[in-house]
Image 1: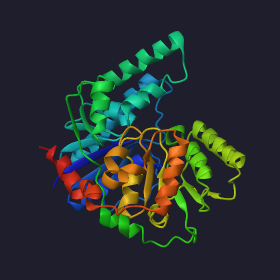
Image 2 (image 1 turned 60 degrees about the horizontal axis):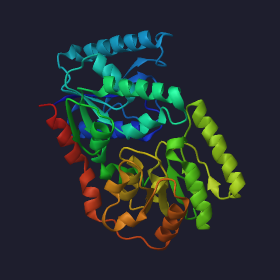
Image 3 (image 1 turned 90 degrees about the vertical axis):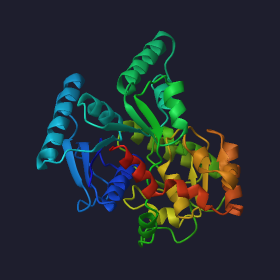
Length: 376
């Protein structure tokens, strides 16, 4: 039995958080002792503490008003928490970090056998840091964040969730990791399909289109609304998601203003965050993803596992590794309203069978065994 540490900021509603719980359940299924360590005591997802342990370093992530000393104190807390968990005489065999803050804290704490699971396009994330700046201010921000990324990820063990992220990190960003490899996220097909059968009386009785994602610019629900309007479909559009920051709240406000402007306020449904989104995805006629960037989109894989048709932007990175073979035609360029709209119409009229080769790569057993190899 191995002792596995999964590190993440919180367990608020989101794909990264859900995949950590998938990891925890799958490692437990293989008989291992799993500990999830959070920066903050924030949990929105359904958790099962009979399968794994949950610990946290603080209530709200703030132990000092100074950013420098806050990181220092959180690093100390992480070291203390690890020591406390290991007081049973069994040391951790593997740590996997799943968020930017934990990437840094784990490095500073010098945890043994520490791996960073990198989740999104580092290059796109880096560009977003100076996107709306010009001149000298832009150059300063470029240098600042380039050095920040180099400091955090050089000489670290990195696992990417898609093959394209390897080049994204090493070639586009110039990071020089200690090691880097691609391991796809684990998906428990049986568990996902079982949860999808749970009755939810709030699900529309009529056919509908769905997208499940946090409300933020990167997910680009604005593009989806415009493409949906242009497709002239009569099916309602369900947008599952949540907001946490002020910028998220402002973005959601802008979305609702756009809905009124497009005249589709009677066709768009906001059911809020769903702890179990699987029945909603399974019963949808079509899942449409409109993101500007991803790592390996969790929801796309889950939709395919549930047999739901999928349309997506061909954003960096991930969708082109998922929609292969006959499914390639349902990828559209980022920001292209016309192409996304056309793909929505085409997918509703005809969609090829989802072949086993599309899904086999994400079998939980294969993925977890690759991670367990790291213990050695």
